[in-house]
Image (cartoon, rainbow over all chains, first blue to last red; front, side):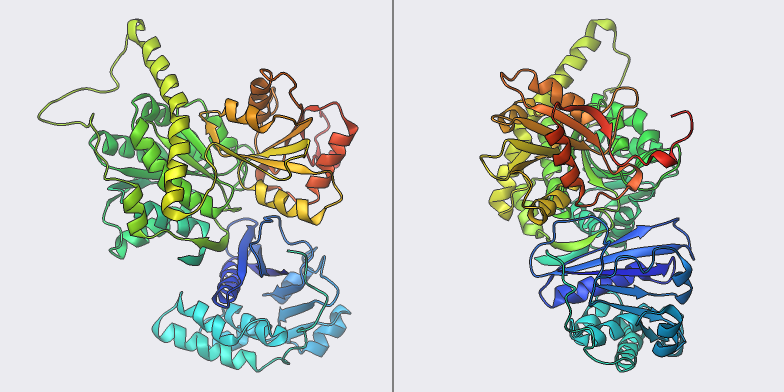
Amino acid sequence: MIEIRIHGRGGQGNVVAAYLLASAAFEEGRYVQAFPSFGAERRGAPVTAFVRIADRPIRRRCEVREPAFLIIQDEALLHVAGVLDGLRAGGGILINSNQSSDQLSNHLGQAVVALPATALATEVLGRPVPNTALLAAFLTLTGLLPHAALIKALSARFKGGVLERNASLVEQAASRVPADIWKEGDYAARA
Amino acid sequence: MQRALEGSQAIAEAVSLCRPQVVAAYPITPQTHIVENLSKLVADGVLHCELVSVESEFSAASVVLGAVAAGSRAYTASSSQGILLMSEVLFNIAGLRIPLVMTCANRAVSGPLSIWNDQQDSMSVRDAGWIQIYCADNQDAVDATIQAYRISEKCQLPVMVCVDGFTLTHTLEVLDMPTQEQVDAFLPPFEFDRRLDPDQPISIGTLVSPDFYTESRYSHHEALARAADLIVEAQRDWFAVSGRDAGGLLTSEGPADARIAILTIGSIAGTLQAAMEAFPDQPATRLIKLRAFRPFPAAALREACQDLTDLIVLERALSPGAGGIVGTEVRAALTEMDNPPKVFNFSVGLGGRDVPMETYVRLHEAVRRGGGVPFEILDVVAERLPEEA
């Protein structure tokens, strides 16, 4: 079982990101679970969402405390206590940032991958919603699922031009990060 | 068909498959997505029903009471303060023997204000005279909702399907969504023999003198007791249609030779199941999932507790000044056993506090200390307490 924690802010589509990733994995025949942990229900407040992906039914419903991967939708959340806590050895951190991966890794003293997801989304979708781009990059980094599964999950939520622009964003974001660098790792937890 | 759905969407689709004619609800977190999804199903032309927008939960409950009294199948849903605000009407719905199904998306109650999950809301109306079914997962929430209509309409008692807020309502997971044909084969159209009819006017809910009120309460109590058989029957018949067994009144699973069991109500069961696999060095443990809380399945509980030495009762509410609600009722039921197990009663996960898998290990530590636990709130952090405590 792979456990993922997504940190974002209310209004950034953090919960939708968790649902999309889980739905994409379901399209590939996996068992999935995705759920949010809300702070205050308002725009801008920190929101955490969790995703579990496994080859058999998932029973546990506790929060993910030792994620294999962290997806951070807002660089400023790095100042919030506990955001990086519990990451498993061999896992990875993907951060929405305009800095380069090297700059951000040096700054944090920890290897991370940076993606200018808000900038990409603003350019392609016309809206500053970083989740589609982050998920596309995440799939490239992990090789966890084909990008087609993400587009299939997107097509259950969006239609017409919105879907087309999201698909285009998937394609652009997917090629912005190195492929499969998080593919092998001792990050799977017992299902 | 297997689908990955948010719990609220799955519940809304299950309600829609039951063909309600009137839906009235007032939005409240974490119930909101259920009503939003039902509104969408109506707007999309999938569900043909009267969707009544109301200004409060009191009105929501009143509208569905009237709708059923007039012969319509109806639905409502609420949480927390909404349940409390409609509580006066909830007692009336039950006392008037109105067959109705509602979802309680379980949430803590104020004050202090909490939007997060526990089961204080539905537990606070446990004496309203409703059937209460608690769901362990979203598959059960779907199946229980469909079963609830049949149970309710057969015994003319309302059913509250209790679903942990956020933990189930906001969790996307894989489940098998029944087809319309399956539901139609299981649930016949609603025919209410006491429906209000302008051609044969009657009054309901009128003043009842001391000459008859006792008999009204007696018959209500007896009807709830008889409903236990209908809950079991609905499960059996739904199994024939769907192939799924969520359990009738309660389920007991795990090693037959185990002498320790954990009894839970609601969605904590899954985390405990996972913990039993993750911590195999702990003593063999059975898991008892209490599905029906009203009627209280005392006989089935005693049967499930035969041969046990220790029973841990985990619940997500409490009666301040008394202790555990489920634990107290379980203890009372067990007194009729020759060799009842010792009971260890804990409240956990209050106001949305996460219940990690390690909880399972700590429960076993309590059993090893022996003696039983009358009642204890788990995970209290001493530094966060006010000075008076």
